[in-house]
Amino acid sequence: MSAKEKKEAVKGKESLAHKGLLRTITLVSTFGGLLFGYDTGVINGALPFMATAGQLNLTPVTEGLVASSLLLGAAFGAVFGGRLSDKHGRRKTILYLALLFIAATLGCTFSPNASVMIAFRFLLGLAVGCASVTVPTFLAEISPAERRGRIVTQNELMIVIGQLLAYTFNAIIGNTMGESANVWRYMLVIATLPAVALWFGMLIVPESPRWLAAKGRMGDALRVLKQIREDSRAQQEIKEIKHAIAIEGTSKKAGFHDFQEPWIRRILLIGIGIAIVQQITGVNSIMYYGTEILREAGFQTEAALIGNIANGVISVIAVIFGIWLLGKVRRRPMLIIGQIGTMTALLLIGILSIVLEGTAALPYVVLSLTVLFLAFQQAAISTVTWLMLSEIFPMHVRGLGMGISTFCLWTANFLIGFTFPILLNHIGMSATFFIFVAMNILAILFVKKYVPETKGRSLEQLEHSFRQYGRQADQEMPNQTTHFS
Image 1 (cartoon, rainbow, N blue to C red):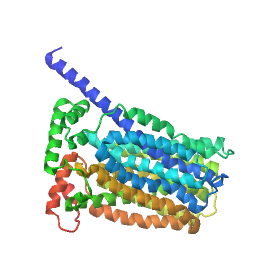
Image 2: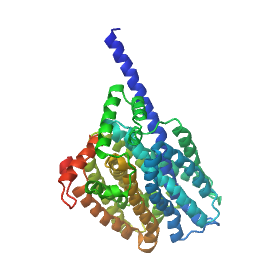
Image 3: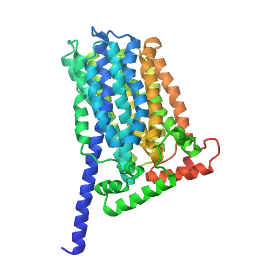
Image 4: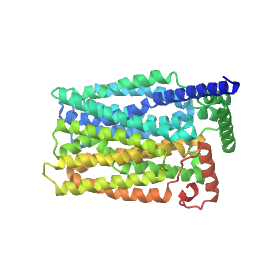
């Protein structure tokens, strides 16, 4: 073997080692996404049993509070998570979250009444909200630019896998142990297992190199980069990071004052808009209340639990397809196509719930349309949302900016989660889904006018583009899609 061939062989082995460690980091950290998915999805099947259990006796209002208290906690967790991850690091924050997941899950499992359940669901929401900010940020910061879309959206894949696991365990436990008053407790406690795996796994994961660099620890940042990149690329990347930090002048602590700069404030408003757009599709009315929707359409509880697995399966398949699609097409067209698809499915649910009311076909039609809805939602909207939120903010406010955006996402989620069972009870399924259709029309208009394209640029290149465009921008937010197309 020639010297050149030996060099290429060594380079290939190094590349495999780098990719292997990157895969390990991605898998371990996305257990936070798995917990996010399981804890938001498990309530779907647990609610019908909680509502009839002697200890809880839920009304439509308390049912909404049990489901949505997690979402309110997640809104605050998103803000605190951004600040904690900026101050203490992405890795250490995720370690803390694993412990909070364990404690809050056990608290929910052993809750003696609705009040205690709501309190612990709020604490669990703090962990979910923190994870929803910190994990995508961490993944974006360790990813090579050309693989960032695929790596960051693996967190979305783990979220829907968590939801599928929740639906599956709900169906198995509900159909085999449905006579037990404590059946819902068995559904909830399973979430402790991935939380323990997350804690132990993060002990061996390195810190984000970009966070280390932002704290002035350039040597440590380069060392981590060399673990997950080839040497020459690590050297080039650390130069880009140093250059970005020099321009920002940010060894300082990030704060709300940073958003006084017009170009950063513009990015924040876009981030908030993207976050709210993802929620007003009505996706989580189906993810949290899918069993209730199918029961409302005509299924019995046991059949609804089984039928709901279809929602979980299509979500996983759709996210896998969406991850593949991100490598082929741009983010913005995916978002618009996803919104058109979800709006069409919601409109059909509303119309056919009137036309087929009382027929044997209605529950199967509704199930088919919720599957269609989730195919568009998970393949296009959810994958793009979490990826773009992790991409658009400058380094020194990335945690805080994503935290504020995700706070708005979870606040919208809370409002929808709380009001959905009340609307369903008072105005019926059709009118409720027509409201979501109207909100989707507004969402499409927002994306078309304001959301930029981010595909194919490093985080530092994106920041430079936003900064340059901000210098030329008018006082009012313009259409940024031309500049980034």
